[in-house]
Amino acid sequence: MTQETEREAFEIYYATRFPLLTVQEQNGMFYCDTQEHYLTWRAATSAADAKYLPVIEKLVEIVNQQAEDDGLWFVAEYASEGYLQKELRLLHAAIEELAAPLLAEKRGV
Image 1 (cartoon, rainbow, N blue to C red):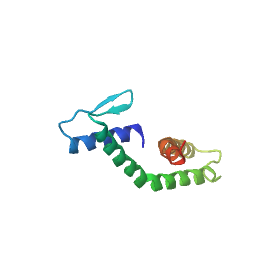
Image 2 (cartoon, rainbow, N blue to C red):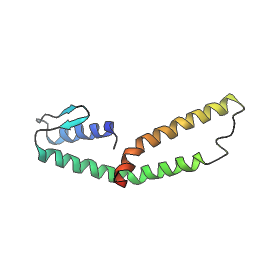
Image 3 (cartoon, rainbow, N blue to C red):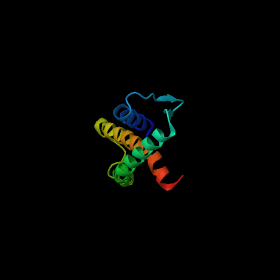
């Protein structure tokens, strides 16, 4: 789960279940009032990770297949072809960046 998604999950979890408790973020780490609350929240975010992991794995598989497709990565003759390739590279990079933490966690890295 990305740090931004984790932050959102954390805020939603606390806002709905513990509206009077304080939650703070410091240097990318989340702190809450009790260890029990943190463990409950962590279990909820782990369940969310497991739910979306197959979708993320499929996206990475598609990106990898497209990376090997010569029909997409030819030398562009026209500006529109170059633009499409540039945007596709950006999309691939974004998917790989967002997927990396989840896939690393799954592999136990």
